[in-house]
Length: 621
Image (cartoon, rainbow, N blue to C red):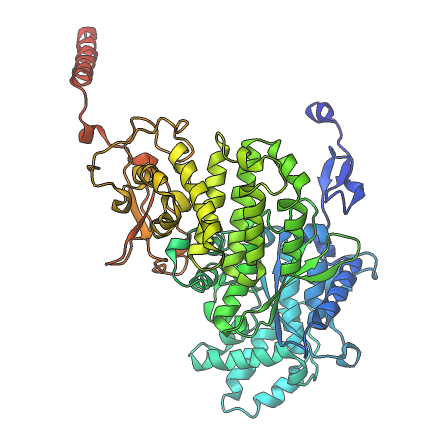
């Protein structure tokens, strides 16, 4: 097939999807296609979404007024719009198809009569990824119209309520502006649903009044109040601050500070009549009413702990609701991996991921065959993502889960040789990351364990740093406060060596010996090349303050926690009176002006310039 393609031959189209869910995706090698976005949600996908919505609502004692849903492009490709169907049915809506239920484009949506629905229409706050925004703009329009159609189902009731208000004319103008796009599309059907049975309309009226009181013009207030789809700004793809924040534990004191970074990054409203408008005030109003948040997973290839974007979008959504409402919402997974889509709690889904991979001896054996790539995956994916979930949703990661990591990877519970494997060569940097993250979780108060376990973790961490140099993670060269705290658990015979390595990387006075002058350059011959975070022989590191070294210095502005320092770049400066954390700066090696340029090099440069000048003048006529 490759030769045919290179020869300009015809490549037959094949369905692209997870082979375990879609056998037609095999064999690979064809011209991949996904699905027709104009047909989303496909009718069978809508029925799957309806089934999951009915199941989701059973977990609440009373019908919730507002729920939250995360939409991803990859999930939409795989589920053919089942998650969109889930959203529509929560609102009591169903698609209108051009050619019946089994085929044809989706022309719009219509309201299911309350007599048939048998419950209130649930308001839904939707967040989208940047890739969804670019891949499925038609679906964004469909959903925006859906929210307006839901409001229209109470149009007559709203008019009756509005006429009782002193600002009736402004509210009427706001309502008419809200209905404008669906009127143009021929989808406006005014109804008389009671507001207590239509939370979308109820919230729209409440929010419009608040916006009018704040001085927003009537038409703008109506359109702003119907905004329900939020995502990153144009050119951005997610909530970077809340994705990186958990890994930079020294940049915050209170985990709820990370909610501010999420709101800052995801406050941009997407509507048919306006794109990427920053509407933080509307976003936070709607966040405060959310009772549960849902995220789809439909692939066997990657679990929820394989990818940091899972906690970025679902965990970030959850902590933002917690910040605005004062109560953590329930977090759920729309499990569409098998043939029977269903709803699961986040905790159950995470636990299955751990049992089938991180705690599974056969999986560990296969990872060990991959060498450093396998070790790096354990540390940089699974452990880091456990940290992300622990920080954003503490009840999703238990002490027992962290204890199992210690038993399996530091005590070699299965006798696989994994502890030794993680302690040799470049793999040691992965073990430094694993143990350093464990120490960070204990230091921040997330993981509660005994002193004996902490001594095992701290000494494993310290021994590898002493022998190999620091790893490129904040847990061995950035989080000064945590590293100082960890020293109490390190054996005395290791202290001097590990402090010397950390001092070489950070130049933090906290780790300098009394005999160490400022220009001291340690012997780091045990570090292989220095490329993994240690200091190479003969190198002098220049260090830059990049944040607080206390339990954490809060970011100065929303999103500040996401600004991790790059080589040669200075991060957030710590407030006066606080310590500082440091990042290794490869670009900060001492310059020639600081160390002194050799005289022979100076004379060589002068001679070269003189020769070039002589040649130039000799050639002149």
